[in-house]
Image 1 (cartoon, rainbow over the protein chains, first blue to last red):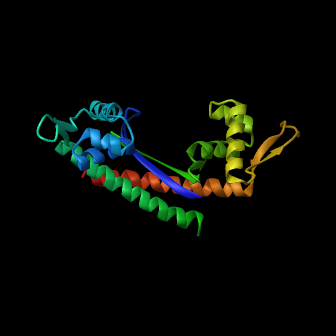
Image 2 (cartoon, helix red, strand yellow):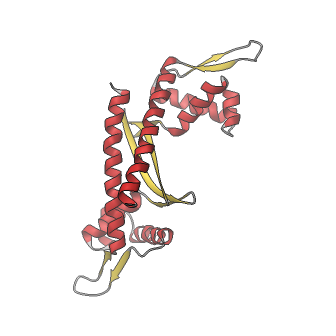
Image 3 (tube, chains in turn yellow, purple):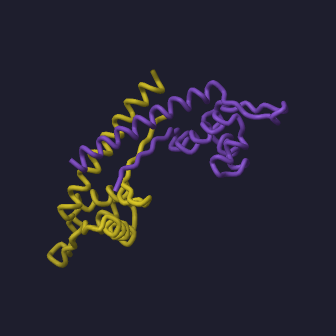
Length: 110
Length: 110
């Protein structure tokens, strides 16, 4: 048996940003490409792009800048807002996971 | 925008116990009846009972004792194991929720 936890941002009862979207943004940040990010996440380009568009609509901020052409056939970079959101979300998520494990041990296994 | 969090117990990647099941056990504990608990949760008796049976199977422990007959037409009480599980789960859940809110404020709104 182990404990699991999850955190997400909501607005008017609707999911705004959570672990799925953070993983896609992170993969785009690291690969510089929606296509490569989608492959890494085992999903279609369309699906990955859909996630980003849905996140942008809900957050009401641009998260990605698509770069056309160039010798690598274009790519995508995160806006400063997206980088900041991702960094903050990951920080919170890691903190919640770490403390949940710790408290689980204290409460359930002590 | 607000932060939400969730904790649950897993075994071999399968949900064992989480907020849904804890709410049903709590309602049975407080009402002494699966029927009354189901009504309070706005679900059918069948559905509530199904939740309990599924939790018992996954935890591999009895959670409820059904009491037949009597002037109140029977009822249900939680086993000591179930009471203990519920108490521990609620304690952990409350702690995680409270700290998630606090850290969200520190990380996102500071």
